[in-house]
Image (cartoon, rainbow, N blue to C red):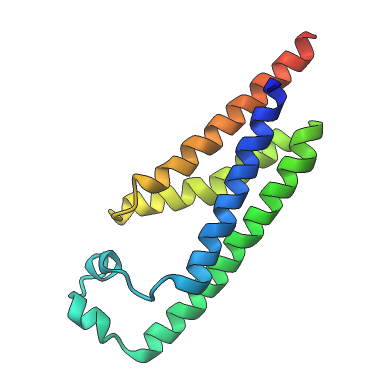
Length: 145
């Protein structure tokens, strides 16, 4: 596989992961996870009996958040298939900013709240950084030819 294809595949995979995560948040995530209740100082039985208004509101929040994750994933896969593949000018900085605003922020927040999923959610950051490194190396290789 040509080195140039590595970054395309990595960012395509990152985009698919974001779409799947967004679907989870929009459709499947419970309003309060046990770690959410712990973070806000609520015992789990109280969390299960949280005011129905809070539960309804959180469903809306997670639907919106999931939609933004899906949109970010769709745009990331499109970017991988077009701008990353064709090495369009500015693509590296867009990938850096998008990764910081999405996967880095999500991972850092999960560490801040001591989430049970914090180490799992570090994986997309590592993968995104690998993609950025591959993209930079592919660019260097292209200039050396």
